[in-house]
Image (cartoon, rainbow, N blue to C red):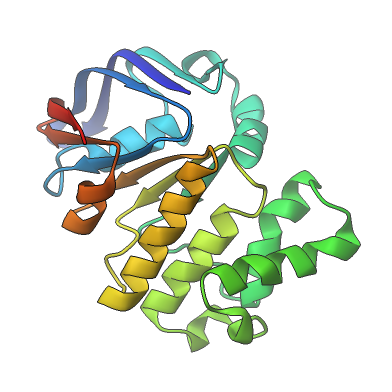
Length: 225
């Protein structure tokens, strides 16, 4: 499902070039729950951005769901992302002027994956899966940080993507809610969704099919549990 070959990524900064990733090789299969662990600045968020098509490598090949992302146009990437990857951002990125349910419906509106009359019902089903159906018509500002994170998870699932990426998805959640979210990720993987999580949460690394440690832009080790 996900294949990276000799992938490097650098950014131009006022202090010069910053090497975020260095010669990454990675193979992830269908239906795997994968954890990427590392300190802040280690490169794990950059790696998620390359897998989800948000960013491009400076060198190397990124092939996800049989699509060469490194060689795709921006227009093609935007459409591909909407249909293929559900992205859970670390800081939610909910639109503040839309209600919770409208935020979850947004990916469906973008791609037209469902008839308009059924989109709200599907969004409510997803909100129910994360325990927030009763908050559907509130604005994001009325919710706690942990609740907004769960809305972001529901939105990521709106188009039934084969891949889900999540950046520190349990960082703002209490332990009970974090466990419930982890159960949801496990269920998604069991149903064939590839789930890739950047995390410090040891509970996630304990149940992941693979855990990759990353430091200074390099993968240090991997272990299949």
